[in-house]
Amino acid sequence: MNKTKEIWIAGFALFSLFFGAGNLILPPNLGVKAGADWWIIVLGFIITAIIIPIFAIFAHSKLQGTLFDFGKKVSPLFSSVFCFLIYSIAIAIPSPRTAAVTHEMAVEPFFNTPPILTSVIYFLLVFLFAVNRSKIITLIGQFLTPIIVFILFVIIALSFFTPSVDFVSSTFKSPFVDGILEGYQTFDAIAGVVVGAVIIISLDYSSHTTFDAKRALIRKAGFIAGAGLLLIYGGLIYSGAIFSSTFNENATRIEVLTGLSSQTLGGFGASFLSVLVALACFTTAVGIVTGTADYIKGICNNSRKAYIITAALASIVGIIVGSYNVAFIITIAIPALMFLYPITIVLIILNVVPDKFASKLVFRGVVITTFIFSITDFLGFIIPVENISGFKNSIPLANYNLGWVLPALAVFVVLNLSKKNQYT
Image 1 (cartoon, one colour):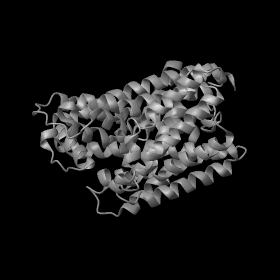
Image 2: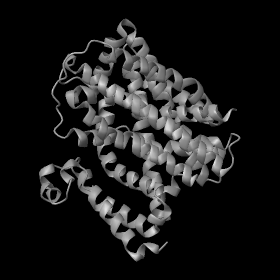
Image 3: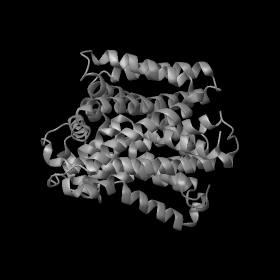
Image 4: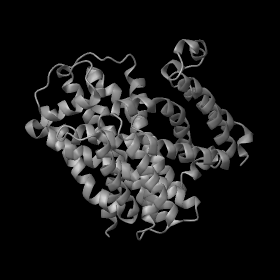
């Protein structure tokens, strides 16, 4: 295959594996709520929904191993626990969420069938794709993603050229911070460390078997995926802002996306959106199930049986959780995200920076600090806020659920200024 073509196919595949329809429902709703402040929301959103995830891909191009390699400098035990939590969360929340979104947006409006039926058929197809994983990059990158991108660009372009109404006032108190935190809900940082490994292993099936060849291809594909995400996420947020005054204040995420498509595509809106949702959801679910099965296969001496069993179990979990509604799945995801996302972010960044700034001591110090100072963010969603308000008020940015940022940065700087960072 032509190298340029392979780079674009890999880039499209990465874009699609990141951009599940579960993420599709987030940007327009952000735009509606942000109104005139839509651009501030974009600035925050792209940090956790685009920049950090693409850094994860760059880290994969550097490591060319598995998710285990991201945390092994902290300790093998830590990395094993981290992998278990990441893959468990991935198959328990974002993967099933794609099935729930598919049912509510692409099936329920046209067929009077229960969500469990959609979930069963959906994850049966996901399983079939996963067991044929050598063809995943080509199937997703060459065939499915171009259709997804085309439909999205049509919606965005038409919203730009549609006579708009006045922007509403923002309902966000801190648009930039809210954009950062809403980016957590895309699961893209977690997707980056999971599906990046899928790309690595998939390239082993191609002619790119050397380390340098894979690194160059992965990095270029990452830039393509990042550019695509920026255009799509930014465009959808702006599109939501343009039509912000046409939506009820309490409109759900799905109602906003459905309304946006109908206002831009007219009578064909529902049909186009159904196709888009089904494709975007499916590619993400395939990436998550495949990535999880790849990891288990790797720690089981490359056992094909272990791969198939894991893919089957992940699909069964998807069927069960995917039968619940989208709002419920998003709600139960928040505590898990507040706990795992900060640690995932610092591991990604530490694996991207030059090795001389990321010794074992730096890894351990920064990760432990991040864990300690993100506890209040996690607890804030499972116990009454007033019970921990005094502690949160003493930590900079903690009231914005970002209390881990400055302490982690301080530890990183101090350890790198100290001669002790020579310890490896």
